[in-house]
Image (cartoon, rainbow, N blue to C red; front, side, top):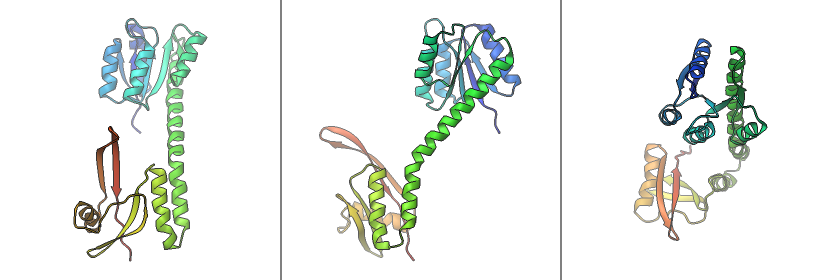
Length: 238
């Protein structure tokens, strides 16, 4: 397994060097910086698994670095270093979604190593939980579709699930038989494929080559631009 990457940010060169030495010996891939601006630039161009950052730094404090890191890399694990272990600092760190807090100076290198390991582990656990929660509706929809054996009920069910999970009002299930295209089930305003034109060509193309087509376009609705996604997939019936 590839070693986790760590970005250390501390305006004290001695602390930054110590962290790099300890973590590198433990097998982590470490970049140590003393300039918060350079750290922000690094985060914008290079992915890291953990941000280990000091809170009190001149000009740009650690919380600002954390905010910018989370915008650039929402999944990054964050471990805060501070020599001022106040309740206010801990509360603010928790509100900002950090994965741990370690006090300076480090009496033993094991304390730093354990904190880094725990922060990465907790962050991965949170991400896994979030992914599972995001996929739960998809699992439920799949179970519902697989449990339906009546084809006449399956097509409307597919269209309904598409509308629910993609939050759309218009959807249709088309069948292509030679030059004829039929909407087996529909909801809302659907593509008119009776006339020769773009819509008919689009659906026919999906049937002919078997590849999904994703159309990503912006449309103007009531003077506001809204992004629309159209996903057409292809299913052959025996």
